[in-house]
Amino acid sequence: MEKADTPLQEVRTNIAKACKASRREPGDITLIAVSKTHSTQAIMPLLEEGQRVFGENRVQEAQDKWPSLRERYPDVELHLIGQLQSNKADDAVALFDCIHSLDRPSLLKALAKAMDKADRRVPCFIQVNIGSEVQKGGCPIDQLPALLASARDANLPIAGLMCIPPADIEPAPFFALLANLAKDNGLEGLSMGMSGDYETAVMLGATHIRVGTALFGGRS
Figure 1 (tube, rainbow, N blue to C red):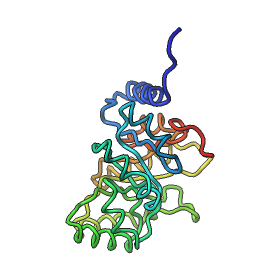
Figure 2 (cartoon, rainbow, N blue to C red; figure 1 turned 30 degrees about the vertical axis):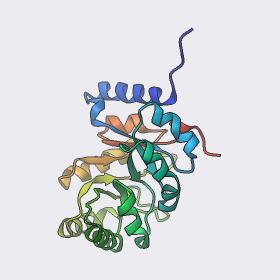
Figure 3 (cartoon, rainbow, N blue to C red; figure 1 turned 60 degrees about the horizontal axis):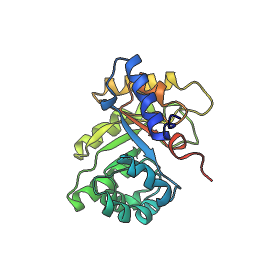
Figure 4 (cartoon, rainbow, N blue to C red; figure 1 turned 180 degrees about the horizontal axis):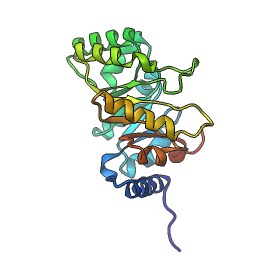
């Protein structure tokens, strides 16, 4: 009897299919396994399968979980994908290899200061409020050029743009809009797509996809 694919194998297969359909290379897509709220025991099987890029929502949770795991797997890359408070900038710069939620001038200043202090430049994605939703974080679209200019002035490495489209609406137009904004601003990185829509995101140019449920199952 054939052995069933693991969730990781299944997601990688789907990425490869989406890449083939859009004439892209699977190697150009970074799969971020979103391990927020999941225990080290739940993370271990993915590490053993070779997954090395993980995403966490909160600085404190990552501080509790990852130092011990990184001792065993020093090549792990850790991405902060949740909202970041300015007072946690020092901790975020010390712990993470990439930050996906730069969305306002006050956070930009805090991160620039933290990076100068630590002598460490951490690539950041600017999170765009792509659906202009009041309840969501993210830089308003019309304020993006100014935030980007400030980031460049502060010598903050900008990896690209990130978005979370409105729930329960077809995400493709929002992904396409983010891709256009990135192109207009000379950026290549696109952090977009989650468990329910990552194949669409890949076909529309995502370079980083943030997948949790499809890899770990639902959160308890």
